[in-house]
Length: 164
Image 1: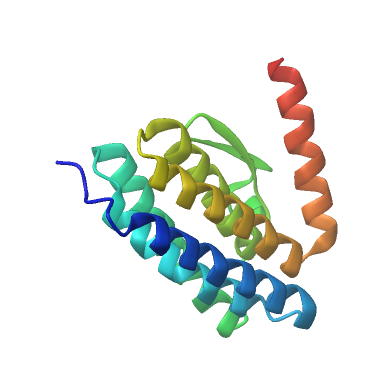
Image 2: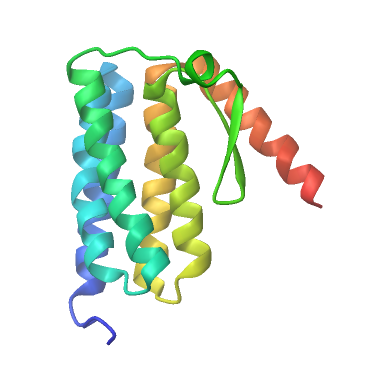
């Protein structure tokens, strides 16, 4: 059954503002945790709004990754997935995801999950939230390592061109 939409617009506006504030604070101070904390309410509301099996699973996984990312950053845990798995990229839900430090892989997977949510959902509010998550995910990546952000952005552009 569809979720009520009476207050969805103001809630999405407020969540978008909170996410933008988190991004701005994170980028100005280099405090990545501000972006993650700013995105948490959006991720939680996305779980509430999604209804289908794959979209509900994607939104729950997104929150789990976001919380894991917070733990990794707080405790300064470094783990290179590329070395552990012996490959530089893996396909996740049909999307090729470059591997490296788990702190970068997490927000990259979140960006992929937000694309899945955007594509597979019919609700305008879940799409709205997916866009907020996508943008913030790239803000998190940039905050952690601007050089990797540049590489991922270039990779995404090249993959997009190959699709045309």
